[in-house]
Length: 156
Image (tube, rainbow, N blue to C red; front, side, top):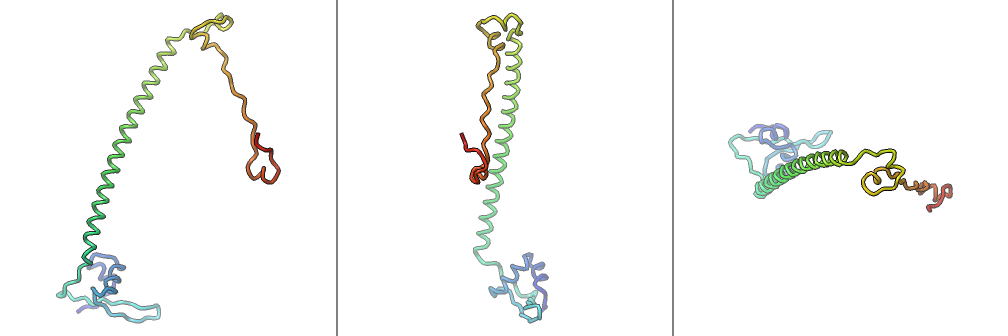
């Protein structure tokens, strides 16, 4: 029988040191507790001829369930990535179509002339020559804390 550290037992078993400590606490792995000034220390009693206890029965089923969930989520992410790609392609095609149509409309509209801007007329040239109306900007409001302290102007 060989005495090894929990780290070495974890390496040999292919698990974490925390899992080795859990197995020691559950009694599925034999160990000796040694006292040190820094605290207790476990030495695992390793016997090559003695089979190591397997993890609890439900752990395998739980692990299989988690693996299935990861695979389901991977497929879902892949599906959403494909959908996003298709939407980006559609958006690009739509943008190109809007650009082409805008160019066609600009070519179809007559160029505004000096006479058209003085004479009221009906049609695209009248719409093109109309001055743009800009809404008046709203008065600036003071911040909440300034109004609360009485330093600002109340909202209109």
